Length: 72
Figure 1 (cartoon, rainbow, N blue to C red):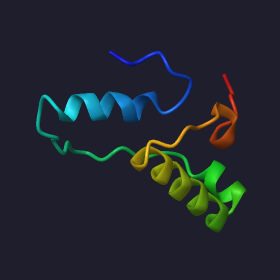
Figure 2 (figure 1 turned 180 degrees about the vertical axis):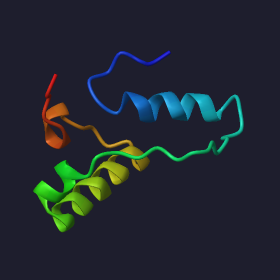
Figure 3 (figure 1 turned 90 degrees about the vertical axis):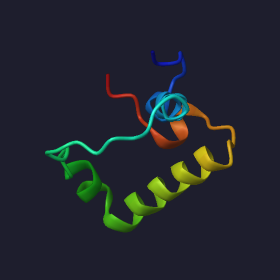
């Protein structure tokens, strides 16, 4: 299951899953809505994703509000 953490729980789940099985590419691909990224701007969106990747790769501490605004 998913760990109890405020953000990036999907990343933590995938890291645990990859230890027990090989990734599988399914078809058709998932398509998401780009409105949030277009509204934020291409470069700002790119930098945000890059920072998230760096935080995950180097296991840097992340404050939940640093990257995500809770919309639930």
